[in-house]
Amino acid sequence: MEILKCEGIKKVYGSGANQVKALDGIDLVVNKGEFVAIIGASGSGKSTLLHILGNVDKPTEGKVVVGETDISASNKTQAALFRRRKVGLIYQFYNLIPTLTVRKNILMPLLLDKKKPNQEFFDQIVKSLGIADKLESLPNQLSGGQQQRAAIARSLIYRPALLLADEPTGNLDQKNSKEIIDMLKLSNHNLEQTIVFITHDEKIALEADRIITIADGRIINDERRR
Ligand SMILES: Nc1ncnc2c1ncn2[C@@H]1O[C@H](COP(=O)(O)OP(=O)(O)O)[C@@H](O)[C@H]1O
Ligand SMILES: [Mg+2]
Image 1 (tube, protein in one colour):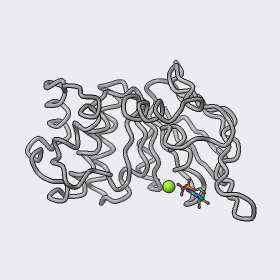
Image 2 (spheres, rainbow, N blue to C red; image 1 turned 45 degrees about the horizontal axis):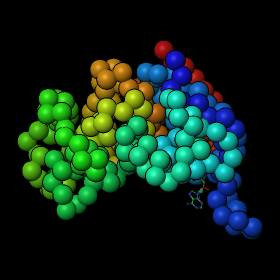
Image 3 (cartoon, rainbow, N blue to C red; image 1 turned 180 degrees about the vertical axis):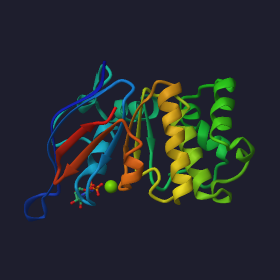
């Protein structure tokens, strides 16, 4: 079953002489439950593509459908709600709010919607991510690996069907990188989540079921490994 479909995605930044063509015709289908790595040189368009898939940014041309929703047609409010409820977004530098405890950071998507957390699910994710004893700490009291776990917990709190991660291990050492990828794998498996992540680490990419290579804003290779 398809969870994600892009047709003819183009993205141009700037105008006139300053124009940069970041994406130049991306067609892509991702099926439910896939664990996909996106690789490619710096500047090839990986982050731009992920931002468009997560409705953080809009394509200049083309269509993006996630689940039943044509997100390329959404307005600002719809886009913000989509990002909060329908996808999990994970970044290289975690993007936690420094003045809030880890607990509040994780619960933020629900707090913004004035929703009560499911305590059992909350306990389950913080336990499986190994941060149950860090909930009352501030982000800067945690190691990089722990901060990334907190960011992953936040991205999971709404149980999104689709998780998007931009170099989630880019700031971590080898041991922590492997652990983070293992956790994503577990989440892919246990919560039946579809995961698309960017990496420049070939070893990490080999953990994925499918590796998509981008160069100059185009998909130049798409390899299913299992
Ligand atoms: N906000 C922006 N404004 C102008 N150019 C941008 C912007 N974001 C990215 N670009 C350009 O688009 C191209 C693709 O960038 P990006 O998607 O960040 O690549 P990657 O993540 O693969 O390193 C690069 O040439 C980059 O400089
Ligand atoms: Mg990038």
